[in-house]
Image (cartoon, rainbow, N blue to C red; front, side):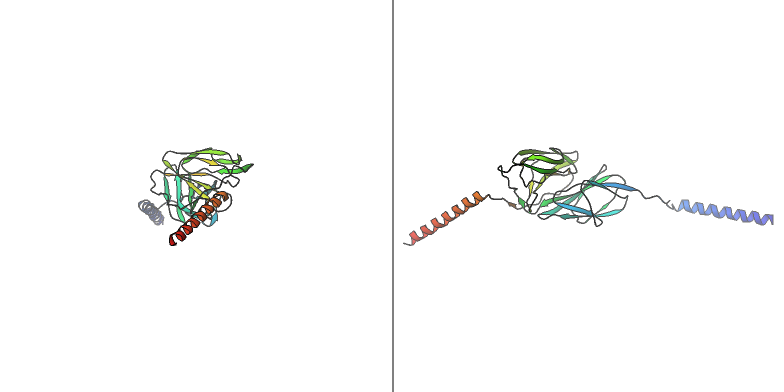
Length: 256
């Protein structure tokens, strides 16, 4: 009886040892607790974005499970179209022209921004006869800073001229400014990193966009439409009428 118990104990010991050896040799993974990481969503002039169907607010941080795939979708406002996505972290930056864009959440904090451009490059009308002040937004962007600094300004005097300058950060280059109007579909794109902007009652925002120096995405050719003042329109009409009348008179004289 005693020998039977000893044999039983020995068999049990051997079985446990074999199972332990198998576990080690097969590299059976241990179960790890899921972690979350933050993704900062930048405000983007020209459109809005959503993640997995949920609308996101620009200038906010959202937490997602590390390693999970999140589907970001960009929705341009009227008069704009998506150019590309830009994402960045301490380890790397990148771009994508896919929309929707599937982004795998890193195990470190990261950020994402949608880059929009106008479908037609319109000039924003300005008039020094306007008075008062206009609220004005200068959003921050991935990869650089601006002067004046990114902020919401409420005391810009209508008719005043503001000098803007964009400075790219390390690993980035300036790409363009986007200047949307508060009403209508007027959106302007400027490719000089400095420009003077005349504040209008219809002023809305100015945003500088930067891209990684490794990016090969370029700006598309955008048709430019200039606005005419009423005085310019009248003068243009008079010139056209004069030319038409002169052509008619000359043709009549030639026939005689």
